[in-house]
Length: 124
Image 1 (cartoon, helix red, strand yellow):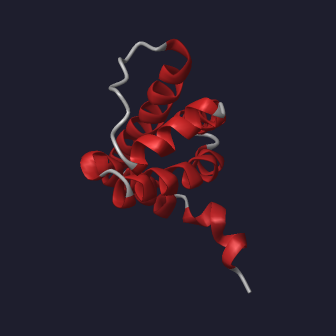
Image 2 (cartoon, rainbow, N blue to C red):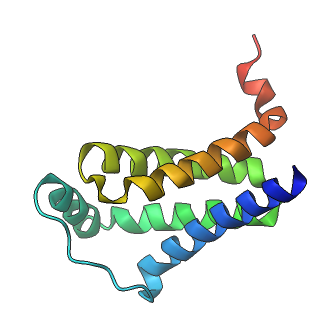
């Protein structure tokens, strides 16, 4: 189980470090924004520069998850980002939904593995 946890942690951390870094370094070409509400949403993120806040959160969370020592804290950073990614792909643009679900499953698996770190949050 330790090997599976390590693989999930590395995959999840790398996904967010790479895609978060891409917002600043532009090493992965960005496709044109989709039409309709999804495009309007993406344009508002870029025009308001809110996209950079999300990117910094992704990089910080990804690095914390990769570190292994602060995985639980990294999952706290990435949780809201993952929820927003899922909601975007469920409600606005289903194109990337399989990848978003894969990321969510990895995060949920790691959250389950680190459930002891979150025990204080759910105690009565």
